[in-house]
Amino acid sequence: MPINITNNGVKNTTVDTKQSTRKEDVAEKSSSAVAGKPNDAVSITDEAQQLQSLQAKAKNSSGVDQTKIDQIKQAIENGSYKIDVERLAAKLAKFESDLFDPQSES
Image 1 (tube, rainbow, N blue to C red):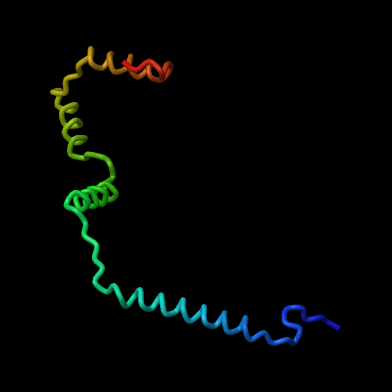
Image 2: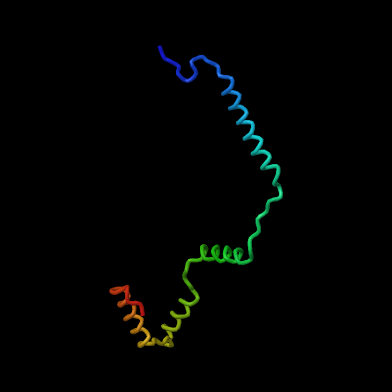
């Protein structure tokens, strides 16, 4: 035979009344909080709107400047693309330096 230890058939009206009163208080507070502040508003600064716009633009972008790529391809094809070998060598040296010794920032 199972034993019911949660209530044992005893009615505790004091506990029941307190629980129902507490539930009613919570319901009143939540409804009055909603009814008391119907005019809440949020305003976004111009900077925040601009940031949102830039983030959306960056998200929709592929990250590739196809126009620049086409210009460089055209310059290589017609022989007008000039390479600054000293700048290229300096960039390669810096890349290798950063790659093998990341603590040395120049």
